[in-house]
Image 1 (cartoon, rainbow, N blue to C red):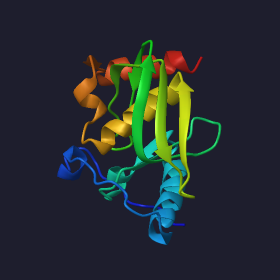
Image 2 (image 1 turned 135 degrees about the vertical axis):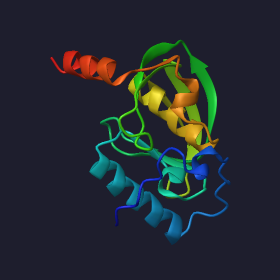
Image 3 (image 1 turned 180 degrees about the vertical axis):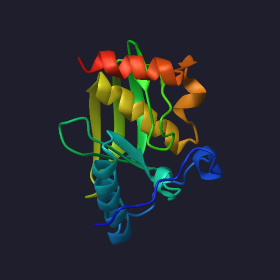
Length: 162
C-alpha cells in the first residue's frame, strides 16, 4: 500500500464525471488499498478516487465500522434529512453547512467483485452522498447552504469537542 497525493479544490479533475469500472483487477484493488491508507493518514471518513487523481467511480467510506467499498455506486433510495457541518480532504480548512438525507440505500460492488446493497444512516449516509457527489464532479461547497468563516469554524470545533 502507498499514500496517494490529494487533489485539491481548484484542480479541474474534481469537477469531472468519473468513468465506470469495467473490470475489478489487481490495479483497482491496489488503488482501493492505497485509498484506505491515504484516508487513515488524512484522518478522514470518506475518499473518492478523483480526490487522488483517478477518474473512476470508486469511493470508500469508514465511519467506524470498517471500510465500505463503493465501486460504481448507485443511490437507490433516500429518507429524511439532516443538516450539519461538512468538510472535505480536497478542500482543506473549509467547512460548510450541508443538508443530506438521514438514511441512504446504495447498490455498489466491493473489491471482491460482489454486488451488494447497503443502507447507512446518520454520518454514514452523509458520507455516502458526499463521496457519490465526488464521482459526479460535485464538491460539498456547491451544496453548502452556508460556508463557515474561519471564526465560525473555530467556535464550532471548540464547542463541538467539549
